[in-house]
Structure formats: C-alpha cells, structure tokens
Amino acid sequence: MSIPLDRLEEIIDGSRATRIEALLPIGVRHRQLRVRTLILGMLLTLAGRRPAFLTEVHAALTALPEADQARLAVIEDWKHGPHLLTYRQVERTFNLVVDALAKEHPDGAPADVLARICDDLLEASIPPQHKDASSALAVDWTDVEAFSRPPRHGTTECADPEASWGHRNSNLPGPKGELFFGFYLSAATMMAEEHRPAVPELARRMTLTSCARDPARALVPVLTRMPADGIPLGDILADSGYAHRDAEAWAIPLRHAGAQLIQDLHPHDRGPRGTHDGATIFNGNLYCPATPGPLLQLGPLARDATPADIAAHDLQAAELARHKLGRITGDDADGYHRVMCPAAMDKIRCPLRPESMTLNRSRPEILAPPQHPPPCCDRQTITVPPEITAKTRQKHDYPSAAHRRSYARRTGSERTFSTIKDPATNNISRGWYRLTGLTPLTLWLACLLTIRNQRILSAWDIRQADNNNRAAAGLPPRTRKRRRKTLASLAAGPP
Image (tube, rainbow, N blue to C red):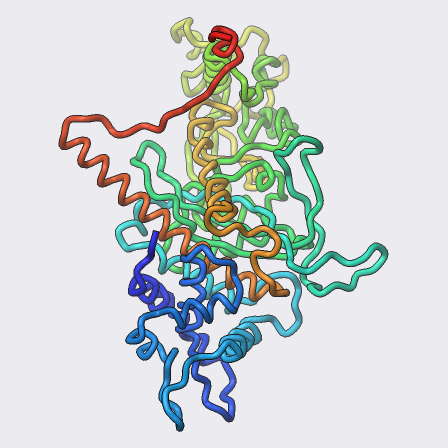
C-alpha cells in the first residue's frame, strides 16, 4: 500500500511537530534539513517497509520527485549551485532533535515534550470522521529489544544505559516466559463501543519506558491527559496485568478521569475479600452475607468451555447477580456511594425483609439468615467509601456474560502489536533500528504507529466499500473463512 505524500505532510502539520524546530540551537552554519522534512523522511521510510535507519531516511528523501525535493529543501541552491541533501546532514538534524527531546538526566521515561509530540502525532493520524467514533480503548504493553547487547555478567555497563532486563511471554514450545533486554512499549487502541458498529482499530496513544519502570503506571498519565485535550475516556479494556496493580496506581486515577474499567481480575484478586458492614466483598461488588458459598467461588470460563458449560456458567452468574447489593447513587465528590439490600430491591426473598417474602418463588430465598443481622441487613441502604473495592470495581459484574462479551474487545490491543511485529511490513525485532537510547526509539515507534494507522484505514475503507457494493447487490457482508482441521476430520478422511 502506498500512502500519498500529501497525507503524510497533512499529519505532520496537524501534529504541530514543527514546533521542535524552535527547540533546536541556532548554529553558525545554515542547516539545510528542517525538522518537518526529517519526520517526513522517517514516515516515508516506514511506509516503504524499510528498517528505521537514517540511511533509509536519506534514500527516501532523495528518491522523491525533483519538484518535491526542491519544495522540501532536499535540493537547495547554494553558493556554487544546487546542493543535494547529504547523509551527514540527516544525521546532524536527527541528533539535534534527539538532544532537544531528551531529558537532561535520563530516568527510563520519555520527557514531557516528547510525550506530547507522540500524542499529537498519533492524534493527527486519525481522520476527523473517526475521532468521535468511539471512546473505548484497549490497552496493553509489549517488548521491544534494545539494539545494545546487555551488560556482561556481574557488570551494569552497556551501550544503552536506559535499557534494562524485562520479562515477556512466549507462545513457542518450551518455557512460556523469558527475559529480554530492552523496553516496554504501551499502546491504547480504539475499539468499538458496546452494542455499536465496528470502528477501525487505530492506535491513539503510546509510550515507551525502560523495563525497570512499571508499564501500567507509565500509561496512566498518558491516558489521563486525554480529557484535558478534549477527548473523553470511555471503556478501558485491560488484562489482569493492569488490574492487579495497586488501586492508586491504576484504577483510581482512571475512574477520576471519567473512564470505566473492563478488565480481567488477577487470580489473587478473585473470590471473597472480607466484608463491609456485613456484606461480602467479592470480585469488585458487595453481596448479601447469606449468599450461597458455591456462588462465591464462581470464576471465569475456561478457554475450552463447551456450549453447555457456558450456559451453566451464565445461569450461575445470573443467580449471583440477584444476591448483589444494588447501587442506588453515583459517586459523590469524595467517591462515596450508597447501595441497597437485594431483598429490599425485590431481587431475592429474605425472612428479615417480610415484604420480600410475598415475591414470586422464582426468586432465590434465603433459608438461613444471620442470627445477628449486620448493618447491611438491619438498614435498607449502606454507604460504601471509595477504598472498598477500589481495585476490583468495574463496569460489569465479574465474571458475568455481559463482562465476557465486553472484555472480548480487548484483543484489539494484541492485533496492534502483531501488525508492527509482522515480518511482511515493519518487524520491530532486534536490528530493526541501530540506535541507542529511549528518545530516538520513542520517536521512531510513534512514526511507525502513525504509518500503521494509515494501513488500517486503507484496509477499512476497502472493506467498507466492498460491504456497500455487496449490500447494493443484495448480498450479505463478506465473512472470514475459518479453515481448521480436527483430528476427527483427518481420521474420517481417505488414507
């Protein structure tokens, strides 16, 4: 796929990346290559599926049509005639940009000015018609190996002091986890809203940190900056690696910014976790103290669950929901809210609430109420302070069918990383770039996700046009063919 040159220039101008020019020192000699042209060369390099080398940036710029070279000052009139941009000039401007965007004392995280440049570049890569299509984001992190070799055993010195040892999962045969030396790349990908049409899965935010830093904590300020930029936060889809963080590090700041969490709970956070005013704390909600024990052991479905297993699990989840104390108010300014007894909300029958015993017998009945009723049974409502279930509270009851369907959207974050690790396009494995330091790598990855968004948009437009043509012809939308062979089909076949 070829990305038009004017589209790339439109993205650069929309991101205001040219403000980097004001940060560069004014030298004695005239500098031919401007920041705008440098970033354009980086985007052209990645769009051409070439590695992130400065030699490729020079080759991409000098391969432009002569009129564009003159317009972008790749060819410039000097004292003795036209002068073609040299590689040393590319290297010089790139080093000046890196020095301007780097921290004076590197600490494994990007500088604020670099983070804002990355935010604006990705935001400019999203066309206006898709900016408000969804506020749901799927977040995840992945590994990016440093070009530097790790320090020798017993030492800490290497060519890239900002890189460090990290852990990544592997789907290859053998151990499922391994160590690597490099950085963590975090990204937030746009996903469809619940019960709404699909949207192109565009990377909207990213950050890069050393593996010595927590990637979940590093992503929080990136996401909480979005409302200040006029971009509301909706559903945040995250796996248990994010949900297991302290509430102050992940859940609380995102809720305060207006986000609703939909995440998988870590095994250490599942199950009963104490009580509040007598109500049982379970998987982020408060439940009646007389809730049957087997319901409080309900966990997520297994991957190999059969349709019968799914139906039985959903039935148990619906039964569990009847015993949940229902929220009757939103959070106030201090984060407090009130919940009501499920019997008072006509969800169950309980002898402690005589009016509930007149309900239909299809509702669950509490056969052994507490002999000494706690406050949640004595009162019709109780107040829940913000520290209760602060870590595990989320939009849907866990692990209900609604949560399972909504959480299934999170796989879009994995598809984002698979597209930038595809050997057919831009594989970010070790050797993809040959620079050291967090700042140049962050800038290259922001450009790569920008190009990746353009490829996703091109495929999206083609697919939508095909669906419209099929609809005009009275045909259903094209579906993906799933070719999967099983042992049974192989055994039934001819020898």
